[in-house]
Length: 116
Image 1: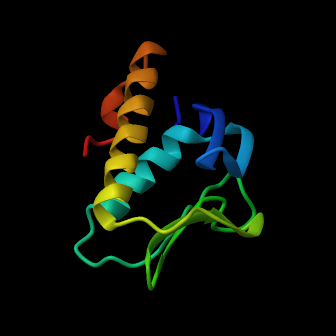
Image 2: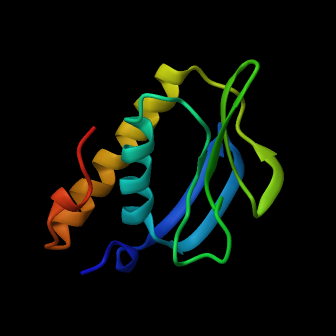
């Protein structure tokens, strides 16, 4: 099973406001990419680069003067409110743990997505 084969509906919210939503999103591939990015020593921005999309950035994370924001190239004017690095990585950790658990329930190896 490939990471791109493990899909689910993805919704990025800022409170009740939907920033980005996509059905059948490659969540396992995204989780793996987020773990790799969040563990890099340098804190540059993130643009999800997937074979499932023609351009990078279906999910993107950018640092602003007030903190880190999450958005998508498919909704260029929609961003979450800025949050601290700690709050962002805590949310990434919750997302990746949930995806790892779902991957295991599907009978695939959760080790495909490294733990944070």
